[in-house]
Length: 145
Image (cartoon, rainbow, N blue to C red; front, side, top):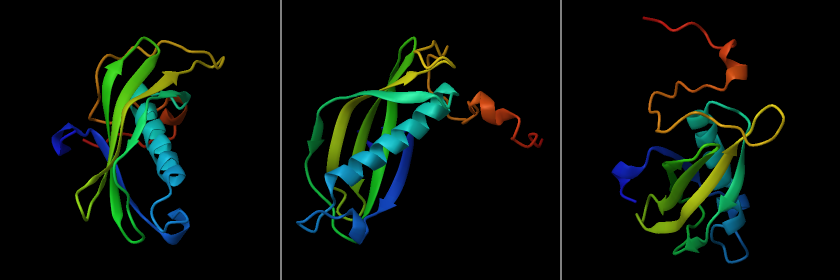
C-alpha cells in the first residue's frame, strides 16, 4: 500500500504499557488499535454506529516497534458489499519507514436496530466525512456557509 492509497490513517506513540516481554510493541495492543480504527472508519463510511468486526484475514507481522517510536496505521476501503465493508490495513514505523504489518482483509458488517445485518446502500468511499451516524445528527451544529 503506497501512502497515496491510504484513505484513513492515524498515528500512535508506543509507550511502556504497549510493550511485550521482549521490549517491543505487543501484537495484541497493535491489533486492538487496528480494530478500533477500522471500526471508526466503518462507522464513518457506513453512516451507522452499529457496525461490527466480522472477519480479519491472516495478519502478517514483518517488523516491530520500540518504546518511543511513532507508528502510522493506514486503512483503505477495498469493497462495499450489500451489508458489509471490506478494507485493507497497513502499519508502518514512522521513524524507520518499515512496514510493521499488513492485513489484506478486514470485514465489518452494518447492523440494523434489531442487531442483524442490514443493507447500508453505499458503493464508494466518502472523503467528506458526511456519513455521520443517524443518532448523532441532531447533536451536530448547523453547517456554516
